[in-house]
Length: 299
View 1: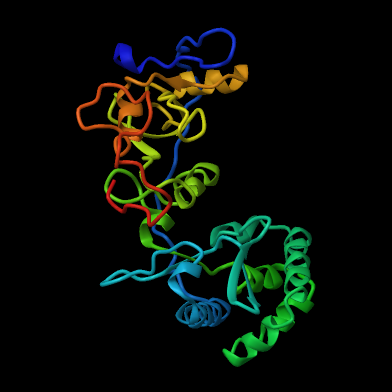
View 2: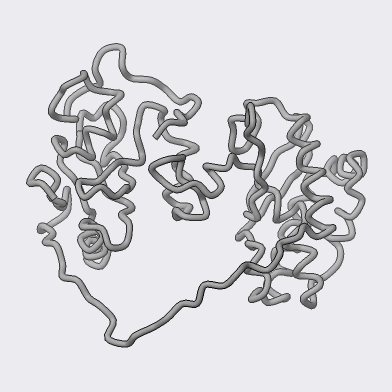
């Protein structure tokens, strides 16, 4: 890292020093094999068909992870715990305690999946318009899924590919994208960080290029308008120069913080400061601060 990009501790006692590198002494191997032919179960086909009907009924501002795909793009259905309900104002999607990825069903204990079913049944019961609305859309199996205890692998499969798990609608980038070419996807970036993409100010750049060329995520250290240009490093790829320091900070209960004149801070606040400004500290430049709005798609 350059001197300006040295990771330091802010508002916490002490400073952080980069740690060493550890390696395994025992060899290991991973075998790469062809993926078995993937097929869509009848459960998933029915769920996906219903989800598309629901999305067609929704206004753009009500979409859970908009914007609506356009052109050649299309919705991808993420097995992320999709709890759809019908309210007096239209369809809403909540997310379950956990989502079960398709491959994770093979290690899922039926009793634990059944807890997800009970949670979903309790939520749907609070929105009595939901089951009749599902029936109108042709998703007749909704009631049976919510009533039937999950007791074996068949029950796990049915729940995993149901509308109550398998239909979180996302763009391809938000679903499985990898930086820097496309937006970061939930499959490859931890949800506590990726989730900020859907609530951040549009003029704050969450994902930045680190000095070693890898890509990480940063957040401000104080509220908007404070003038503090420091940024907190919250994600760095394994093997990157910042990863060891970030891990050490977490072990010590400290924050890994980059100064206002670091390249990461300048990228993060680029839309809020004057072009060519060498520090992110200070109030937002006149006319450059924006409120919430559609997220920029370019990275």
